[in-house]
Amino acid sequence: MKDIKIVLQELENEALRDNIPIIRAEERERFISAIKTLNPRRILEIGTAIGYSSLLLLSKFPSAVIDTVELNKTRYVRARRAACEAGVASRWNGYCGDASDILPILSNSYDVVFLDGPKGQYLRQLKMIEPLLATQAIVIADNVLFRGLVTSDKPIAHKYRTIVMRLREYINYVKTYYDTVIEESGDGLCISRKK
Image 1 (cartoon, rainbow, N blue to C red):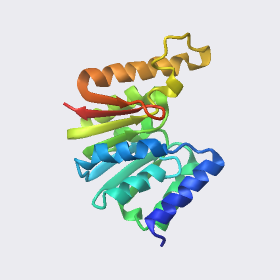
Image 2: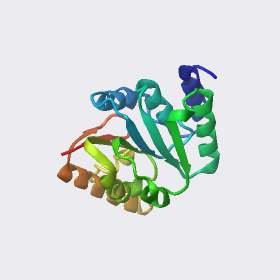
Image 3: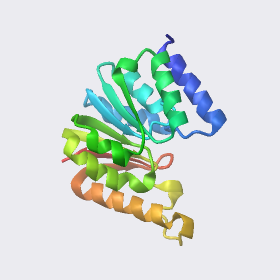
Image 4: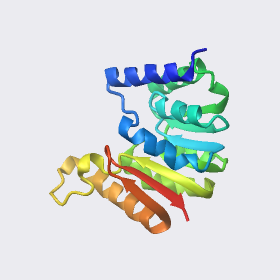
């Protein structure tokens, strides 16, 4: 077993080397501070990648358990290995598959939800997760500004129109039904607290 900080550094190096997206350094502090007030017991993450965010959360909240979903089997296996290496496998529940298939089988109540999977699916996934949200739960969605295109008045290239439209719908929804703040550092971190 390795110290979790060492495993996090290894994952960060690996992500940089292999161009695997993980939460940006400039967003991490705000990410953790938004959650800190809750001292979460149960966290749900959509988009595990290689496990950086889930291990970061487990390192900061030692009484928390995380359920995390990853579609890519290779990344899921790497994330599971990282949880074992860091000695947190008993608090790390990984699911490999499409979140649309996995979310209906979950029955826990979540204090924190971190959306970091397919950006165009955020609203659909949130609506599936809403019955599982604890009172005053926080939902954090990464990359909601999608390269600045979501807030741009300029014409959007055809290949990005759907994702931009869906992210705009997500933002409108959480601004209507949640207390929401969008951190514009990085690629946009949307922090929403259940009303």
